[in-house]
Image 1 (tube, rainbow, N blue to C red):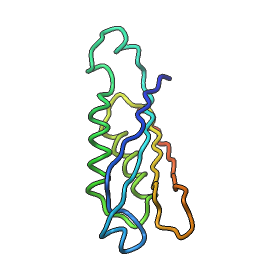
Image 2: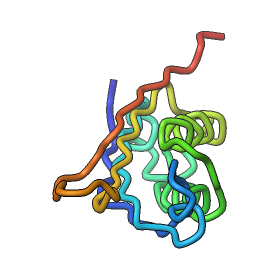
Image 3: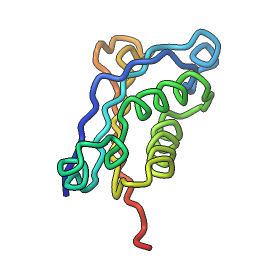
Length: 122
């Protein structure tokens, strides 16, 4: 199966366990892998035969900006499920959501969660 990678999607959102995260917000970064058959688009050269990844980027940013969950597990799952539902050609999606500046004392790393969702066979 073919795959489109969309990396480095950044948006400011209000998901987080701590009350200040839901008030002050923070940056999130998302990488997405989109699995689909690219043969129709390769033959037709038509965007209608593939996934318009501009739409996927907008969808991810909008979900980050408008969602307000306690856990990033819920946010990343919502992003993956929504992409899979919105994009008819997709068979599978992988989403990696990162908090590059998690409010954890003495921790300079980032927290990332990865989920993969597969469309059920019709």
